[in-house]
Length: 228
Length: 384
Image (cartoon, rainbow over all chains, first blue to last red; front, side):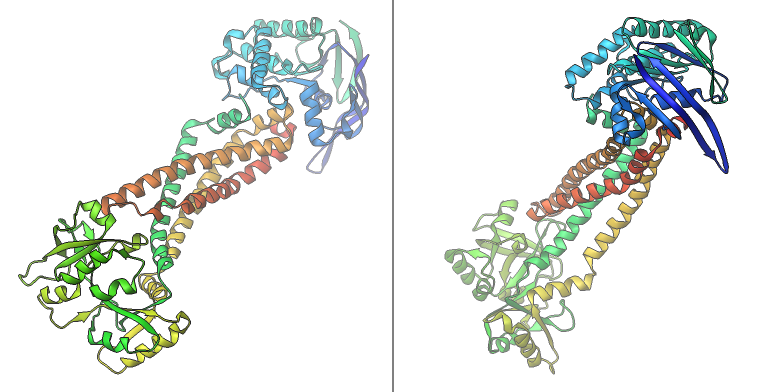
């Protein structure tokens, strides 16, 4: 069953007097439970495509359907609520809030739910256990390694049990060993927990962990999805 | 961690900066309490002043005296029900800095003109009977441990006794209960004062108090009294007590305007300082705002969080500042005067501080809140 469906999607930015067409008439379907690696040279539109799927940005034309929602039809606050319920984000530079402990960073998305405080704490602890950092709950980001910070970011992404994980170069700032740990973790989330994952990467080794790889070049999909 | 916890942690993201900003705001609110207390004292003097009584003093200045013969002439004016007179004595007890406000009065008529000071018939009679007698407000007597029957020495800051010293001896013959702290004035007899003063004997008085039969005729009667002495060497200026209080305040300047001016300058400076701090925080945290929006925080929620930070910062500072200010005022008043006048513990000042705190929070926090709420996620994340 398709969980993401992009139909004839284009995205254009205006820089000064220039119009820059970042994505051109993209048509893409992603099955539920898939793990997609999105590759391509810099400036090819990978992150823009990811932002459209995650509801961080809107297409200039075309439609983006994720689950039962047509994203263009949602209001700004409706889109925010939709993201909170359906999408988990993992960034290259982790983007943890420096003043919060690992536990509190993971708990942050749960502030948007009606869960009581005790339940929020418990869920955050479970998510940290899932990524193997239950014993680092009280540490602040500055007290953790890059790999550990990215694992906390993954715990934060999954704590609200979203259906899709959107990962923008999650191993781009990590050494090989840490990168492999993170990719292994994403595989577990995909295989055991059924999360649909869309991951932007420059790294062919990282892409090997995905079920399918898509290649973008100059705003167009140039290679059809291939079985990993 | 709840929403408040998140706001708290965001506020103290940079502890030193947050604490220094708070310290500045605490100082501003402490100043607000101190200066408003000064204002309250001056404004209260006018509030407690009476419109049913006329005050007759020298036209030249309140410190110039009038001949006692003026009293008899004022008594003849139709519409004046009761008349008395008084003279500033300026007392101090044991130490020149231990001021005890003292007036030399006519014992037989004073309490008729100022009935808000309640005295028993027995103590009033004793005051009438004893030339060296003195009556004191119960609060003052308790403060200094005076008992009826005690001989109380007072220093005058102006009037020398016949032996050329500034020391005077009085017999405490009675106590009375003033209506408010403005009645906390010790009373001695004018005839004893006039005889005892080394330059006395001319029966000079400082001020005449007149109770009006009909307050609506105050202006007319005041004019009539002044016309009696218009072409004499001792012309008068007559006004209701309320007007007299206003004129006196006008002589020393518009205290409220000065107080509010200083406070306005303080808070304007603080507005720039706190606003700059909030804007610095906004710039530093732009990518973080992008992250929380990514997680699903709506624009309205982010607006509320950022404004909440401002509100928390200013409210905490206001609570500490007002608490400290109240303590400092209490300490100063007790050290300088004795009892804390109830009006200084005014809820009005606390309420004012609350209103200022909320208004200030909004002014300081509004722009960063709107900016944070309007941030586009993609742009905010790129600002890293």
